[in-house]
Length: 66
Image 1 (tube, helix red, strand yellow):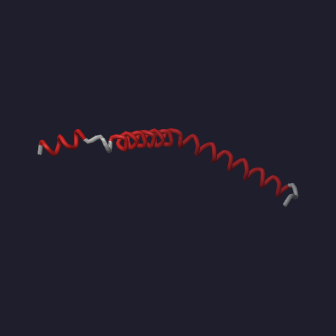
Image 2: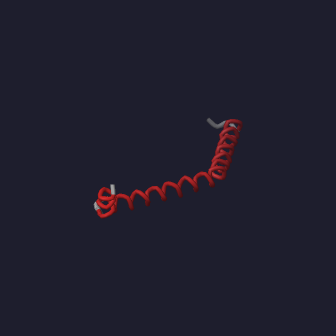
Image 3: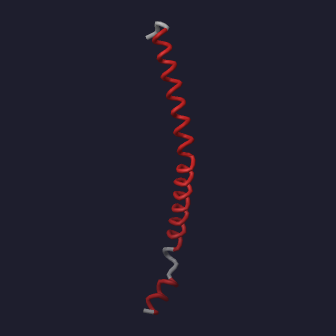
């Protein structure tokens, strides 16, 4: 068992892949955290935009527009 562990400990071939995997995982974690934190604000902003567009379309219809 010690020989097997020593062989894996001394093998450097997969080191770069592990490091890149950790970087990708940290970026993904940061992205999810940011989206979760800002999600309500973004949803509110798009809701306001949607309401404004609905109001503008309705006013245009009442004014005789198409």
